[in-house]
Length: 276
Ligand SMILES: N[C@@H](CCC[C@H](N)C(=O)O)C(=O)O
Image (cartoon, rainbow, N blue to C red; front, side):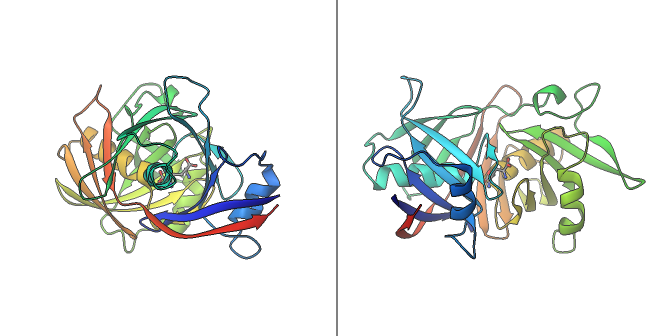
């Protein structure tokens, strides 16, 4: 089967987007691995799949696969690319698009300056909902790593995140600590690990070691989780510019019980077809 795809990115977090509404194909695990492979396939951090919804109240089903082949619950940069994709391909003409993910429904819309604004839903802070092993909810938790105690915020944005505050993202041990914390036994489904430098109450710098991928140039859910963790620790205001290696996102959260809003760009790079 010759499968058509679109290569996109959100601040350098890159995707292969596949429309399974106008194309009929059942993607196999080996297809995802080949598509994501930067040497033998197309190459991307995540494969995003556009499908018909199962729920009649929403417009699309949005499925997300990390480049290691694992299917995951949520992807924020991908959500913005998803919105641009379905509008550019005229799969919908709606200004507000409702999308079903494996962690719930999110709403997407395009702003006057062609950025995409996403209602990412309410963050989950209860340990069992993240999931994270702890007796009770807290703004931060102490975690033992090789005999060293680290303080970390834990948040679910549909997918699990741990967030550490560091003095300087440029020298933070992202590649050393990232894989160890990603697979820490207190995160039974593993986690994405953010390293957050607080510039002031409305500006942070962030690097993210993504579960199933490694460090990426940007992570949308990671940016949301960092702002939630920073607010819970009393360090941040409600509206925060998050500067990642690939560029900046605006993240807004009005506190517990409210959804996190994410605004940022979505970019198409090229179109192609791959023989599967
Ligand atoms: N790049 C993403 C997150 C993708 C999923 C993540 N690696 C996970 O395993 O949960 C984003 O922009 O949010």
